[in-house]
Amino acid sequence: MVKLEVQSLVVQYGNRVAINGISFCLNSGEVLAVIGPNGAGKTSLLRALSGIQPAFSGQMLLNGQDLAQLSPIERARSMAVVPQARQLPSMFTGYQTVMLGRTPHINWLGRTRYQDEEAVQQAMQRTGTLELADRRVDELSGGEQQRLLLARALAQGSPLLLLDEPTTHLDLHYQINLMDSIRSLANDDGLAVLLVTHDLHLVAQYAHRVALLVKGEILSQGSSKQVLTPELLSQAYQIPPDAVNLAVLGL
Amino acid sequence: MRHLPRPYLFNLILLGVALSLSIAVGSVWIAPADVWLWLSRQGGETAGIILMQLRLPRTLLMAITGAALAGSGAAYQGLFRNPLADPYLMGVAAGGGLGAVIAMSIRWPYTLAGLMAVPLAAFIGALSSALLVYQLARRQGGTSTASLILAGVAISSFATALTSFLMLNATGELRRALTWMMGGATLSGWLPIMAALPYIALGLGTLFTLGHALNVLQFGEEQAQQLGLPVARVRRLVVIAATLATAAAVSFAGVIGFVGLIVPHLVRLAWGPDYRHLLPLAAIGGASLLLLADVIARILLAPQEIPVGIITALLGAPFFLWVLRRSKRGE
Image 1 (tube, rainbow over the protein chains, first blue to last red):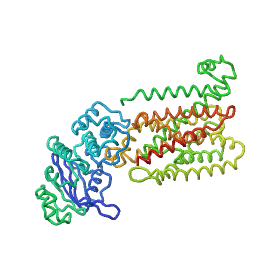
Image 2: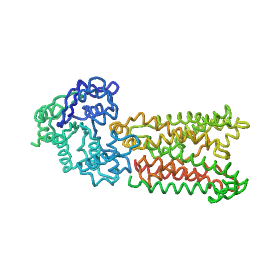
Image 3: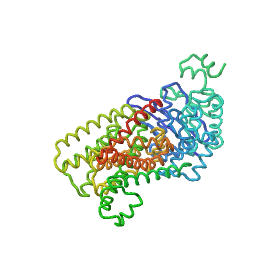
Image 4: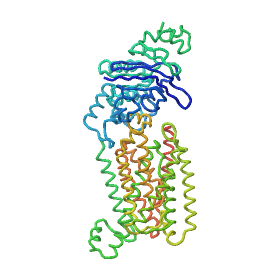
């Protein structure tokens, strides 16, 4: 069981405020989608949670423990990040890439044990990437790379999963496929999933809860029915309500 | 992992050939089979002296120098995520050379303790260069090749100019030290090896433990941190270890270019980018390459010897252009 609590979080780059005092909770078995227009602070939130950008003020607690106090290894054991696939290093194979997910569990020499290989195997099976094991990652399609990065995060075996626009490079088939696995990771495996995305269709179908982020603040959070309304979305994205209906609800 | 034994076997056989040639070739031909005879003093006094005082020390010095340069080249490439990072091109070797020469110009100490101080001075020079280049070339997601090379050129020129200046004023013992520094004259005896080996062993040994960390770093510092790597600490360790190995190599063999560029590249092309194997394989390959280059340097204009740095540059410069073209296409 895992519980992430974010309280009055502020993230600043110099004087520029990227996140301005947001609070939310995320529990095991939940998919929380964070949506919002470009520049709303979605990526900053991921960077703060994963320890890349220190919080200016506020708190991030994982099971009551301050995230800022964790060492990189402890943090990686409790949360795995799926970054956007771009510029993967050349010449690494799919298998090698996924194995790097075991970094917080293996020693510096990088000697892998049976349970590491087992975890990699399972993660690749789960994401349908087994056939990519021997392929070079820089020669894969964006979608294949994205699935491998998800496999790498799963191999980490962490109870909290953060995803940065995971469906961007995927075709419709793999979008549905990926969202199905994400939903099943939460429902069946009890992972807590925080998903940053632009795809409101998928949010409506797959997220348990939605947080709408605008200019560094949470405009609304709740079920997708509560948040994905023409009124809120037209306000957030500065488009007329009719356009929201057309774009999101397909009406 | 699947390819574990074969690359090591290949590289070790290559090293064996290179060592044998390096011992064999010279004014007197010493066949590998005869080495044991010489060692047991059945082959005569003169040959024994040639072997023990000239051939073996030189061979070993070239081997550990090549290993240090190639191993640290591979490490710099991994750290900077740039295939053109190389101790010579980055000006780290020249900075180390300057440090060594300054130490020797203060006092030229031909004792083991004295010699062991030289790599430390070289280390200060080399580390300053490495940090300066890194600051100048660093950017989001790696290092800019252009900045890396340009900063390296500037630092190299500066350090080389200062070194030349010191050389012009040199007298007596220092002059001897300086010709040696330029990769020219051979220095007989075991002292330089004994002085360099501990530093090179420490530097390379440290790097060999950082293979996995360098693998993770290939995905960028952000992802590396998210995967649980203590990025700042790894970065520091890699720079210090690679620079120490380079500095020790430069202190006793002179500024020799391109070994750190050529060898890691070929190893990567042949056996993949896994730094856990790339680093040791590059070290073995670097030893082999420099030994072979040194053999060529001895026989090309025999009985006159040419500096081994000339041979590596003749091989390395075209190679550099080839890598540059490839990496440009990749960007």
